[in-house]
Image (cartoon, rainbow, N blue to C red):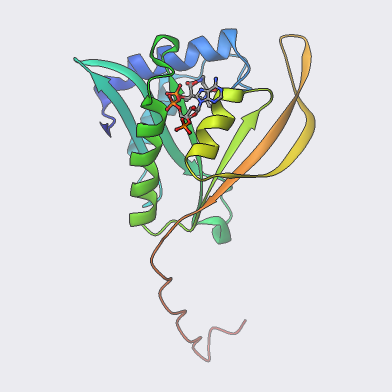
Length: 176
Ligand SMILES: CC(C)(COP(=O)(O)OP(=O)(O)OC[C@H]1O[C@@H](n2cnc3c(N)ncnc32)[C@H](O)[C@@H]1OP(=O)(O)O)[C@@H](O)C(=O)NCCC(=O)NCCS
């Protein structure tokens, strides 16, 4: 497990494109442009991480954390995701990627991690449960892909992040 680099983008994009075209784990209907991955690599937010699983020089999977929503109060919440080459599933790599990613998030002060799982996806639910996530709600039929309506489950894990710094006292000029 290691941080992703520019040289990993083609492999990452290929893994994701397979799921976009053939699966329902993502609601993307077309593979995204290369710029999407470059933007993720370039993010300077302390809660944004992008890691890959590499074996013998081959990228077998990746995981990343991004903003859940961009409004300021969400800054200590990150949404996480993980994808493997279909040939590399069932070997513990998803777990290793998430262990690495979640440790980075906790160390960086992220308070809680969210994961959005399209249903059904027993492998993803199994992985998230094994990694300490809990289901917190289901949204019914919010996606339409491959000619069927698809539910989405949200899973959440609180992280053992250090306490927040004290909120600075407002200056008289600052108002409310
Ligand atoms: C979901 C995914 C990342 C899981 O990765 P993986 O390497 O196969 O999972 P692991 O081998 O690390 O298993 C992790 C846990 O999930 C469980 N699990 C894995 N596959 C499972 C399955 N098909 N059914 C039930 N549980 C499963 C394992 O038993 C393990 O739990 P344990 O540690 O208690 O034994 C992988 O299947 C994948 O890339 N799927 C396609 C993309 C996808 O769905 N991504 C998730 C988007 S939310």
